Figure 1 (spheres, helix red, strand yellow):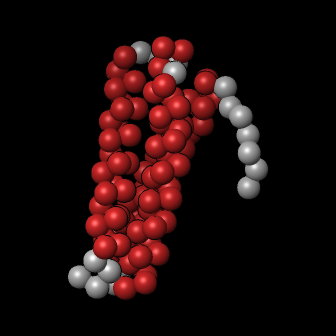
Figure 2 (cartoon, rainbow, N blue to C red; figure 1 turned 90 degrees about the vertical axis):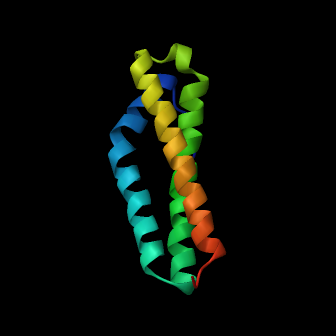
Length: 102
């Protein structure tokens, strides 16, 4: 993987382009974690955490530069709501990891 520095508008465009796909990926991994047990549950839950953590990093960057974003207040609230949703997914995944055989 490579490292790349994005400008604020580029980061917002990247987020907008990948928002739906990333949300579906996290949801799918959590669904698989709930369906499976043991190491399979841990694998899928950890993958959900990895994806959600990447999204949170991007969201935190965007929210830290909210004044510079070329969007309205409603769009910024969507970013905040998405960050909260990703944090909830991480908490759910950690709960599944804590109880892999439950």
